[in-house]
Image 1 (cartoon, helix red, strand yellow):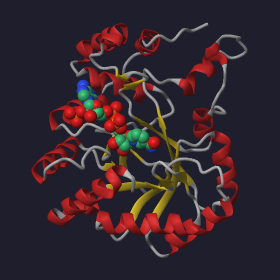
Image 2 (tube, helix red, strand yellow; image 1 turned 135 degrees about the horizontal axis):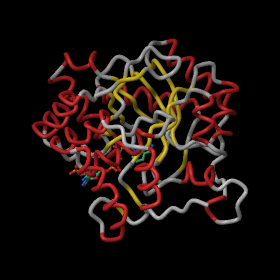
Image 3 (cartoon, rainbow, N blue to C red; image 1 turned 90 degrees about the vertical axis):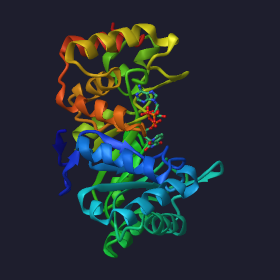
Length: 304
Ligand SMILES: NC(=O)c1ccc[n+]([C@@H]2O[C@H](COP(=O)([O-])OP(=O)(O)OC[C@H]3O[C@@H](n4cnc5c(N)ncnc54)[C@H](OP(=O)(O)O)[C@@H]3O)[C@@H](O)[C@H]2O)c1
């Protein structure tokens, strides 16, 4: 595994992170095996959200930490807040504080390493977010802050008021979901790929030292692309890379993400130890410039 230090932090985190959105249904034995595989593979970063299975994922993780207290200091725990499922996004002081307090309790930790705002709230008052972050940090409950699914202008607006550096922006990204880079390859053209929908968020994050965390790296519009008959060309291109470097197709996918110079930190959602160990090899694999474009085009993208 390889590690890096996100700008303005004292963290040392693995290039690949483990997402915990799918752990609610695991038995204790299965969760122990999953986290055991992560630690064996050198993955030390775990992503949560208060809403995953209505708090059950955080609870399961908290129970794991009770069974294995020595693990806490070896890992970085991130969680997200600000969604009221199916109803609204809520960055009011009351809601954000309740979310953070609830996560602390469920995760059974004294502090959360990183807290992200999960999705933009149209009614967001950045002064309020600044106040909440100061309070949570001042009380020793949260070390670092960031966002998820925010564009460059929303980041700028928040950062104008928030005194703490926004360290991460978690966004969907993978070979079959490349919106963040398409328009940058089609500058000044008239095709649909040239439409800039996100305010060049990836470039903005690079300029401002914000680490992008790609979520659901294996997802396409019509479900997972690995092994899918709807994505034969993409699977063939990834298999070619997998065979060349002696890694799995999933690892080839992650190697493609890691090859991008933005130094993104993909979040994998697998709970299968064998798959996790295989995927971790991506961090040691550097694909070529040509292979990166082969995968990009095999996913159905054009270049002008
Ligand atoms: N910020 C946001 O809005 C947001 C949204 C969604 C997710 N997330 C975060 O991103 C994390 C990852 O999301 P995700 O679970 O949708 O991502 P994913 O890694 O793209 O998908 C993982 C799922 O694919 C399955 N899978 C089947 N074959 C696979 C293969 N060959 N390689 C890899 N996976 C395979 C896994 O099953 P097995 O368990 O059997 O391997 C698992 O159910 C979440 O846990 C969460 O932390 C964030």
